[in-house]
Image (cartoon, rainbow, N blue to C red; front, side):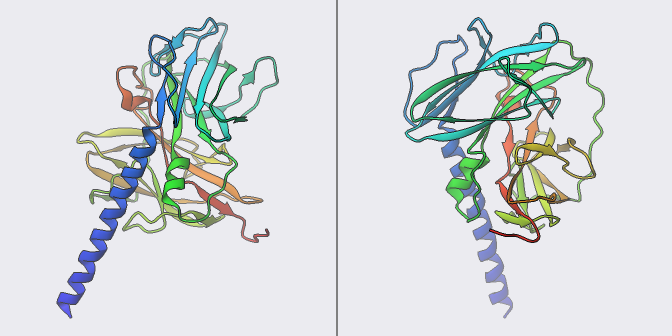
Length: 316
């Protein structure tokens, strides 16, 4: 009986390890389809199955991801450029964060909006003029592009879930930043060293990474924030409900934490209330307020698998 019990444990460990490796492979495979425009501002030759994206000044100069933006008259006036080199029609969403808090922006002379959805035809390009009011003492500006924001995935499909979890990020310093104050960090509930160091993952099991594709409003879950490097890494973490920022935990819209090398932290949280089926995603930003153009890792954003939140009294 003891040998049988040990064999079951070994099988479970192998299955969890295989899942983690498979997920990393799928994420890596998908990430190769995303590129940014070249530093000299010349667009690369279009390649099949890629998404090229970047930021340009109004006079057409490429703005390196991770560089510093200098607002004029307290406004960043820029063009978001996207080459959608995929043989499919796809919807995207665009949102803007200042110091990791969602803010309104203008498209040309239109009124301010908190989010912008648009659809791109197969193998097409688009330049989006964005005017962003910059508040005094803003330290970091982030522009996020969301794939298929209206699509709700309820079934367990790792390939589609991995495509949807990828958030395309453009992160920049702002010129009038001040010395970074000591950020108050949130204490985790559990610290684990098991090799499953996904940067951001929503789970319903404290002992393993168990995907939650559908949850009920008010349901208590965990999110795991991992560090796959050998050195401590600081993160800023936000939550989006239908692409509007909501609280992560303890009524905080942005939480900060430092994860030691080769470990992950688990935090308990509650799914927010909704009136209808709603997409929910947590996003982790490494190196908050320390983005640099010579540090690619500092330019990234790591999304969880999306969870579809259903109201308690769900109706189709």
